[in-house]
Length: 405
Image 1: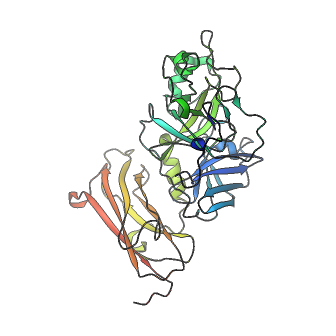
Image 2: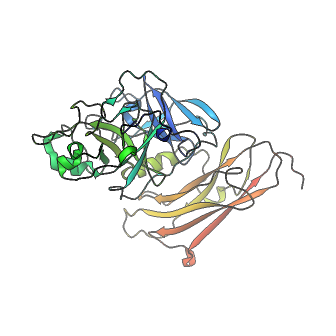
Image 3: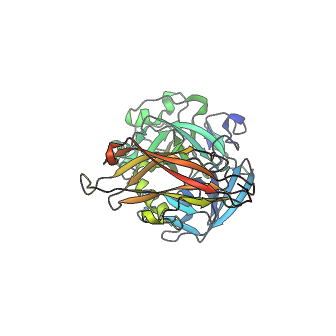
């Protein structure tokens, strides 16, 4: 990751453990390395397809996922890898993959929800990745031989790739699908390097010292909006026309005046959600199979499930239903007894139900039996029974460490 012209060693540019980025991971696969991000189930890593499918149609047999958290470093070899079936490497379309860890990640590893609204344009993105460092004026440090560093930067989601393609046409030698990629340029405050200002008259001087651009090694890395995953780093480009040459050095090296492209997560949430649901172990498919009392366990985390069902008629067959949800403490406390979750559950046209998994934290400490709650609210596409505003369910965590009542 390149951050303006400030040093990559500047503490303000580093994504240190404990700063909320401990679910951003380094991935090694097929002789290359890139970046990925841990999603809300604690097992699924979202990344770029081109990182795990370097040969068309051939997915790497395994990938090594490296974590940096307050608990230290840890690496996992994962062989459960899925590339979105519509991946188009020729045109850099649908460049997404999921990697499932063999075990759930450490409790200290941050989990992230998806950014679901399609209102990303104009918003500030927080970029995090393990890409080669460098300078906006000179581009990537090609001779960098240090250890991969987790670096953070910011940029603005300036436009959608479809808008760029409609304006530039053949200047872009590939055919990106409209609505699927976020585009940002690398500004230094000068109109001469304001790529989108020069190319499509979308003028913006940038964010100053925090502005950054993705570089090799950032592929698969997240772009966050409001702490949720809005984009996945895919590629960069240096574009010019007869009248506009914004790239500061006319070399494709992530320097000022170049463009970065992120796969737009809001357009792929159905594939992500349903792929993850297919991997939940022993998930209940009917109410009488839901466990309302679960054993705590001794180490790591285990799942407890909440089953959400829709009974009624959709307004149209292709209508997507949704509810928002959040966990709430009872006698059980988030962070020590379970991992807090909040987000949006969507039921897609082929679904009438889905589960929400919550991770229970195991330990060897004797404790009383405890409970916590899940609140479900803001139904879209239907109403709750009795026109209730909130539905609440409780789960009980049964201690197995010798507590005597």
